[in-house]
Amino acid sequence: MSDNWEERREQIIGLGERSLKKSYYPELKQRLDDLERFRALLNQSNDAVFFAQISNGRFIDANKTASQLLGYTQEEILALSIHDITPKNLVIEIDKLSTDELPDFDKPPIITTELTTKNGRSLPVEISFRKVTFQNEKYAVIVARNISERRKAEQALRESENRFRWLAENTSDGLLILEKDKLLFINQPACTILGYTFEQIQQMTAFDFAAPQEKFVINQIIELGMKTHKVPAEMEFWIQQQDGTQRFVNFRLAWHQISSETARIYIAMTDITARKEREADLEKRVRERTSELAEANQQLKELDKLKSIFVSNVSHELRTPITNIQLYLGLLEQTQDDEKADRFMQILTTESKRLGNLIEDLLTLSRLESEAGYFPKEPYILDAIIAQVIINYDAKAAAANIHIQHEPNPQVPPVPLMKERMIQVFTNLLSNALAYTPANSTVSISSELSEGDNGRFVTITIHNEGPPIPEKDIPHIFDRFYRGQNALNSDKHGTGLGLAISKQIVEYHQGAITVESTEKSGTSFFIRLPV
Image (cartoon, rainbow, N blue to C red):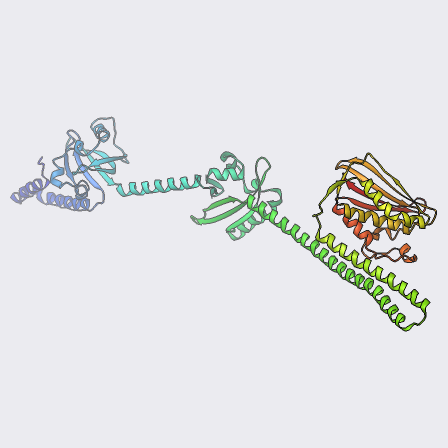
């Protein structure tokens, strides 16, 4: 058999021309025409087709695609054998065709391998082959398909999948892919957010994750999805983890219709519990701040009201002595009676003192408010200060036939205080006690040391046997300009500021002042100061 197909063909056709009269020539010509048509079709194939003798592995023919695939001419291919272009494993498979080890197949086996091109490059291909026998000679028909583009596509797909997996595993968001209720993919952050393992999540539904208060919402979403064949693009709700911990999660969903019967859902989830807690904390603080502002506003309204009352009271208290002074000055100018003139002068002196005391008390209140928290305190013996105040009132007490009884307590240590201010407190309280104590009675002053959870305290008690303070007056006894029923019924003219000033001074010393008054025991003022 000639190695060159064209020469072989010319020999056959030449033989036919020399034997035109032979009866078999028309049949041979028909077969040659069929063979030409077959070869033309074979050359149009996108697959490379090789014919080789199994006995020696040499190629006896190849189509044009095979020539183009390997970079050889058809003549060069016929000078090659299977061993020249195929790896060893494929040669072994081809060799099996010459034995009974590999029977004839209805469907030829397909092998993925590589062919070596003329320039030495390896070319990935899929090869199918079958054994044929002609005139007792075994041949191999090898069909090779170039899969370079498919390999590139597969490599690109693998790289894309690797990038996706790397991104999926290195993101803080949880990712899930579902198809027909089957979990196709879930990353570790999703398992962490949901609080279950991958194996557990495969057997669960959305209801298993939802917190009890969210199950109704989940049910409504599922019903809506079944009716409309759509799901919301974004949802936020509480889920409950395996250990009972609840997390607030944001879910973003994408719906991809693969076919008329199959849809794929892509879910991205973010744990926003911290943000939810911050929002809740912010809302709480806003509510608290709103409440504080409302309370402050109410206090401002009350302070504004008190300011109005204070201004009104000051105006009233100032107007009264000023009016009396103006009145009696006019009367004094008109009278010629010396006795009346003396009486008018006494009234003018009294009202002037009253006006002076009122102004002095107002200035004291103003100084106390401006000096709040800035009192320079030094340790003093309280009984010594009380004794000094009593000396100033001995004459007044004796004139009223009232006995002042002071009971010093040597156990009381020095107390840190502002001396001049505390003298003002004791002076005010002792003056009031003498003013409302009847003749032949006693005003007593004593002190007692005590200890409590907040430290040591000294309590000074100033007691008188005068008429009790009406019960309705006691809650207001320390209010500015408040004058109780006893003061109104007496002929004593006060400013109504003395007890308010005393209370403010005691409180600036981190102390407290209270009062108790009954018909049986009389009236007692208690001053409690920290030691």
